[in-house]
Length: 95
Image (cartoon, rainbow, N blue to C red; front, side, top):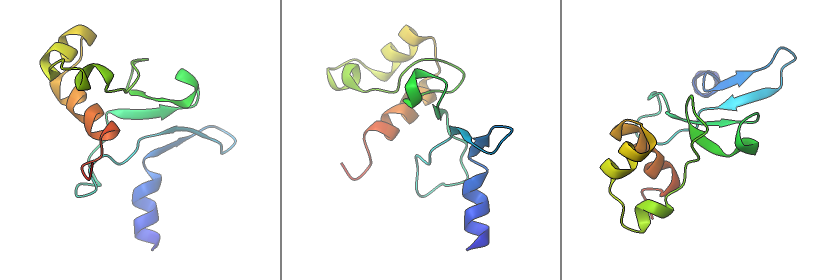
């Protein structure tokens, strides 16, 4: 159990007094050691999920409306893999 918790806790950034500041959520359950490009930061966008090092909200409305991953990557100035991970985060594999 301790090993599992230690693996999860490396995905949390704490402040100086022990409060959680950032959380890097698991996106792929089959690859828990992958570093997430999605961050939930309490100081950015009221704690909504955003792409790391940005204020770009993770949302899929444009993707669901028909925009391609390449179009979204170009519009936001991000890499294709980041857009793919954002879509995976918002639309779980089971859905």
